[in-house]
Image (cartoon, rainbow, N blue to C red; front, side):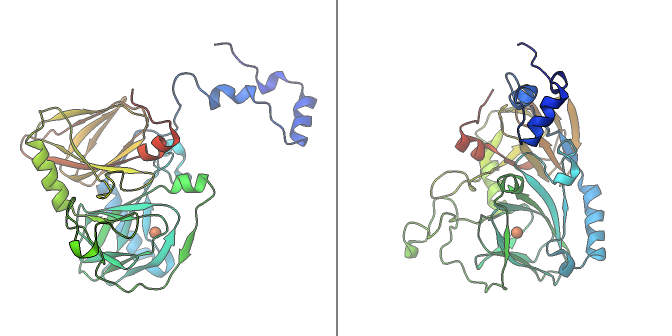
Length: 342
Ligand SMILES: [Fe+2]
């Protein structure tokens, strides 16, 4: 491929005249914008340790009352993308959120889609358009775009969860905003799936809106993984997707969520694809190899892999299973027609 001309090669007066006219020559930036053969990502393999996050988050609980925080969150920022940009990857934002007993994170709604993975604590609920979703460790709870949500906590110990949003995407598109609301009235869900494939007859065959299931109980996810493991060859990833139970499609429009089980001593390779992916250890410890970066992770740690990374995961325990939840950008990339596996 021929080297392209640089800005320095152009006469200074010419460049200045371009600038005055709000014009920029393409060719000096051409290779950066359209690199040969594969995209270049600023996303680095990154690892956020629970043992580092937890005390700092609890300290935030002492330093900053809910009234001053609205959402008391420490953002898991990828150093490759610049910490100030609050991005784990191009489209994924990650934050660890703390709610103390008796506190309420007030009602609001926003354009970004959000999901939460509960890390520790009990007694909190997320209200989503009035539907009360209990929050137990490992649960995945959706607050899709535009839906009112608030978090209440009547338990006795702090509750902490991992927020996963498509915030960087919405900011990039200039469509990110929030609306503050008034406290919601908790209602029994008008229509609730007891489990995938089972819908209450009294409410007809389909839910009113596009998100028929908001809370994916960890207990059920774990059972599904164990059942799948019994029929899966060792070394093949035991993985379930969080899907919309009516369509079978992704549970959110932009991000896909999955849960993964590694049996004691097992190693797996995640199929290499263009979607950046984040992993969170719900139970157990393990090792990840993301390209050239080795990550020894423990319970409740979070780590990320850029798109097209080679990702190997290992459960080094000879006795305990390892359970992970992942989120990735594949739905967004599929909609854009750019998703690929290599
Ligand atoms: Fe929110």
